[in-house]
Image (cartoon, rainbow, N blue to C red; front, top):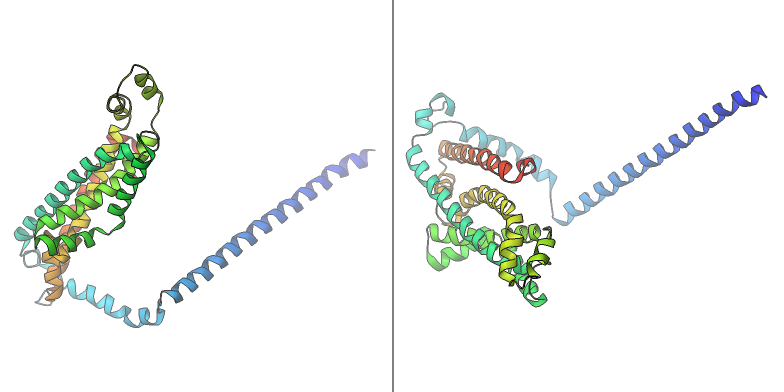
Length: 294
């Protein structure tokens, strides 16, 4: 009797170990199969997109040498050995960078206002009519689906070179992006206050103003600040098509092979975006909680 009792736990332990080993083996097999499927899909997609690794490795040296050139002054010295020569056009570049920031600010502000006016009509729980929700959603989808630089190119052809094209492009794209984000915030709002206000006979506008808006205003501000940060980078690129800002100076430096100017302008843009990222992140964290830092 004593032998049977002592052997039984050992058998159970062995059975549990065997079951655990089998489960672990199956898990590893699933991971291996998933990885194999991922690699196969990547290879098929690369072939379909005509991605040639031979070309990449053949010309990778040109990529490295370009960075070597933009970090070298005309005198042959490294750029960091003579900051005066490297940033010789800093005053002009800062002026153009200020124009980029203003383009981003005005475009983001217009986009945020339009998104604020439209998002209540596109949200599932606040739209007055299904047909209106469908129409506004398609409009917002169009605004955010077309790349901002495409809008900028169209407006440059329509209104000529300058900041106007950049502001309009950023405003339209921001309307689409913020409109979707704002409506998602509204859809997650508590509807009990709306029901309470509606029971008093209040209008739809009053329900939005007094029941929904207090719940979502911090989220609106958080996403608007995040969008401004994104639009600063967008405005820098839009200058490539003549939509104003420092991007125009950068593309001129690239086309004319002013290598050290390219690196100086890039450093100026990167430092500015870095500072904006820190500032907006801090503000969003205080408006929307720690999750907004991400």
